[in-house]
Structure formats: structure tokens, C-alpha cells
Amino acid sequence: MNTWANIKTIAKRELGAYFTSPLAYVFIVIFLLLSGVFTFVFGGFFEREQAALGQSFFDWHPWFYLFLVPAVGMRLWAEERRVGTLELLLTMPVTPWQAILGKFLASWLFLALALALTFPVVISVNYLGAPDNGVIFCAYVGSWLMAGAYLAISCITSALTRTQVVSFIVSVVLCLALVLAGVPGVLKAISGVFGTATVDMVSSCSFLTHFGGFQKGVLDSRDIIFFLSVIGFSLFSTSVILRGHRS
Amino acid sequence: MIKVENLTKLFGTKRAVDGISFSVERGEVLGCLGPNGAGKSTTMRMITGFIPPTGGRASVGGFDIVENPIAAKRLIGYLPENAPAYTDMTVSGFLNFCAEIRGLRGDARKKAVSRVVEMCFLEAVLHQSVETLSKGYRHRTCFAQSIIHDPDVLILDEPTDGLDPNQKHEVRGIIRRMGEKKAIIFSTHILEEVDAVCSRAIIIDRGKIVANGTPPELRRKSEWAGAVTLCVRGMAAATVTAKLNQLSAAKRATVISDTGSRVTVTVFPKPNQDGELTRAVMDASHGWQVEEMHTEVGRLDEVFRSITMPDTAKEVAK
Ligand SMILES: Nc1ncnc2c1ncn2[C@@H]1O[C@H](COP(=O)(O)OP(=O)(O)OP(=O)(O)O)[C@@H](O)[C@H]1O
Ligand SMILES: [Mg+2]
Image (cartoon, rainbow over all chains, first blue to last red; front, side, top):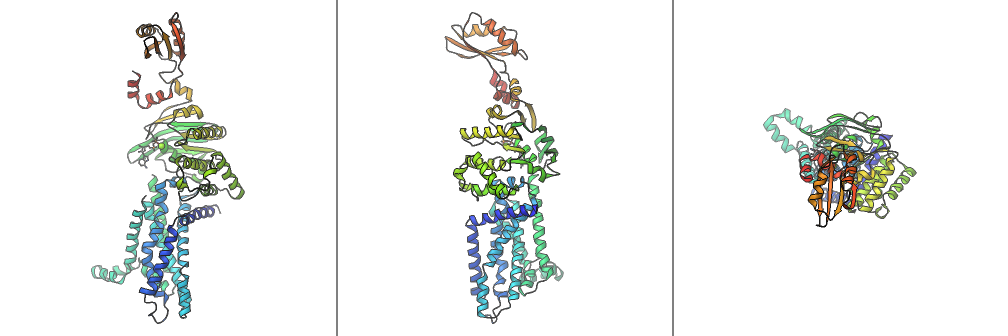
């Protein structure tokens, strides 16, 4: 009731802020262009026998997100701190959690919109062949969950600094680590140095590993829980950092 | 309404606020004075719940700001230092957002927004982006936000900073009028404002309250309080001061100006003798060509200086 009303008010304001700056439009255009180019040109989409969107299109998402999501998340708290509106927001009758959730949900919805706008890709696949739309749907869900995890990490780095650029760079580095932890080449190197036991542990932390299931059309609760816990943990860290600044 | 007990804030090892206690009731306007870095803003940030205190307590309307922050914050309207506002919104969008988050919906929200727009003269910039506002208009926008829910408690950090003289006058008027029904704390560096709006003032220095009283009480702490200034024609300055210095109630007589034909002299009273001094000076000047004579009420700026910078103030008085 009251809690949700506050979260909604904050999320609405935040979402509005995206669309009053050119950032939102630039982001959406870049995302769509990248998706198109990588899927149809580099992804070898036309060479594949069956129109396998699960591979050619979604394979690129972890890499796009690496740069695009921190760009969406970097302003969330850094800007509030720089302009001083954080003082305004946190002296309003809202809890820090409501503010954190409201802002996060707004950005996550924005990413959902960008993702939804890739629908022409799905239409063309259906036009060209007869793909399994269940698998596609599943991959979309996974992609959105993964984007949320990237975003939550950007929330942490955004709360750490007043400078958006610093926030962007730090979150790219953090997310890169989480992606690389699932790249076969990297895992091979790790197994060479630390042995195979470590590999399982490292790869179980990777976005790639957990996104893989969704791409194959498997909705595994462990993957869902993984992404949700990354989000929960990151938002919790954000709240700790925000509290730390003020004391 | 506002109760502050032994409030303390440490930044690292630095004591920004050091054991401040005071209370403000409904119908009072408390002015907060003090040099830069004294801890005024830090105190306000603790009362409004933005930063947690290191020690002590602050409560608003009976709600402790740490234990019951939401209930306390509902009662407070706050204008932070530098008047921050969301730069990506229009003035109207910003005020509507603030009203909504204060729980005002539908018609109540529309009414609240149009009320503050009128009070703070924001019609002209209503659809302008906050980013492009002039400093004064941004300040007014943020001030409007602080009164949008007609709060019982108002905390204003330098509310007239950056306003033109007309707007300063308006804002002071608003504060005084609201002060009749609310509890208000505001900080300022403009001493005339203390006379214009405060029912009581405190002076904070290096985190501590060093003076507390009504404006007339504070003014009486001044060396100038009860001093007599007179303007005499056709006498040598030395003769005038020599005679005045002999008075038992006089601490000393100082020449303010001397044109040769016309001397202006101020006589300062000994402690607690300001009543007698005027009478004594009148008797002593009997037969002189006195053009003008008046008793000083005391100067806040001098009180401020002597309290917050005791060493320098003496230099100036010499
Ligand atoms: N976040 C912070 N971290 C460290 N020190 C701080 C912080 N905020 C304030 N201070 C210090 O606390 C002291 C009090 O600052 P405060 O802003 O309360 O002063 P002020 O009385 O409002 O001054 P002014 O008249 O300039 O506005 C200053 O010495 C300041 O440097
Ligand atoms: Mg200040």
C-alpha cells in the first residue's frame, strides 16, 4: 500500500528522467543496432540450418550488457549525490529500501522495454522458419534476469562515487569478471593453475553459465535463484554503502 | 515540537557538532547563527534524519528521528543547503513529485502545488526545466517543496541565500507568518533576519551553542548596548572625551569623527551601568552645543564577532 505507492512514485520519476534526456533514445538505438548487426552479420544467422535464435542472437547479450547496462545504471545514485538531491530524497518519508527498489525497478523496466523492442528479430525468424517460440521466450526471460544482475552491480558502483564515469568503469570491470568466469578459455587456464575443483566453483558464479540454460529453453530454478540472489545481494550492498556515506 | 538533546556528530575524529541541546515549540522561530563550518548544517541534517547522530537524540513531534524516522519525517519540511532539485524535471514535475511522495494525491496534490506556486511566485517558470533555472528561482523551487505538505515543522538551511531583496522580503514574511502555527528552525548569515523573523536565536561556534536568547537579549550582550553617542559643535575633541571619561558610569569615550568644528563621540557604559550612563552624559553635557544625542541598542554583528572571535573583536573595538 504505502510502501508500494512510494516505490511507484520513485520509479515513475526515475523512468521519466530517462526519457527527458537523450540517453534513453541513444541507448535503445545502439542496443537495437548492435543486436541486428551481430545477429545477422557476425552471428552467422543465415548460415545456420535451423533459425536458431537461441545461439546467434542471445549469445551476444552478455557482451552487449557489459557496456550498455552500466551506462544505464551509472547515474542512479552518482547523480543524486552530485546534485545533492539524495539529501532531499532521504529526508522524505520514504525508507532507503523503497528508494533503492524504486530506482532499480525503473531502470530494470527500461531495460525490459529495450529488450522488447528487439521483437522484429523474432518476427523475422518466424517468417524464415519454424523456431521453437518457447525457447525464445525462455531466453528472453533469462536475458532480462541477467540484465537485472548487471544493473544491480551498477547500482553498487553508482552508490560508491559521485562521478558517473568512474561508476561506469568500475561496474564494467566487475561485470567482466563475472562474465569471464564462464568463458571456456578462461576456465581452462584456471583448471591448469588451480585444478578442476576450482573451475566448477568459478564457473558457477558466472553469468554465462547460468544464462546458458535459459538459451537452451530450460527454466532451471537454480539459474533463476542465482540471478535473483545477485540482485538481492547487490541492492543490499547498495543500502549499506548509502548508509555508510552518511555516518 | 523539536527536541534536541546533547546531539553530537563526529566526522572521523573531528567534532562537527558537540553536545547541542535545545527545543523549539509550536509558534516559535529559532534562528541559527554561526561562522562557516560551525556545524549548523550538520545539526539540521541530523534533525531531518539525513545523517545519523554519533551521540545524543533528536525528536520531532515526539517521534525519535532514529527510532521512528518515517513518522518524524512526515512532520518535517526541509530545505537543504544549496537547495538541490532534480535537474531533469520541470518545476511543475518536481513539485508534483514532491507532493506525491508526501502522500498527496489527486485534487489535494493539485491544490497543494498551486498554493506553493502562488506563494513562491513560480508561475513564470512552471514549465521550465530545473536545470536552466536561475539560482534564485531554483532556491524558491526547493523552498516551495519544503512547504508543499503544510508541515508542522520547518527546517530551512539558509532559506534566503541567493534571493533578490524583494524575494528575501517575501520569504521572511512567509517564515514569520508560518511561524505563528509551526515550529521553525532556520540558519542564516544575515543578521538583520534575526530581528526580522526570529523569536529566539542561537549562535553556534565550533559545534557548541555559545549564545541563546531573544534578539534583544543577545543584543544586550554587546559592548554597544546602552552606549551614548553625541555630536557636539564648537569644542575640542580632547576636552569632550576628558570630561566624559571622568563619569563614574563610563568605561571609556571614543571619538568617532572630528571635523574641527564638530565632534562625534561614543561613550561606552561600565557593565550594568547603561541606565545611569544616559542621565550622566546629559548632565555632563549641560551648556555644550549638543546637536544630536542617542542611546545605542547594541549591535548583533558586534555580539556575533565578540562571541565567535573574541581576540579579533577586541582589536576592532580599540
Ligand atoms: N560529510 C562530511 N565529512 C567530513 N566532515 C564534514 C562533513 N560534513 C561536514 N563536515 C565538517 O563539519 C563541520 C561543520 O560543517 P557544517 O556544514 O555543519 O557547517 P555550517 O555551520 O553549516 O557552515 P556554513 O555556514 O559554511 O554553511 C565543517 O568543519 C565541515 O568541514
Ligand atoms: Mg551550512
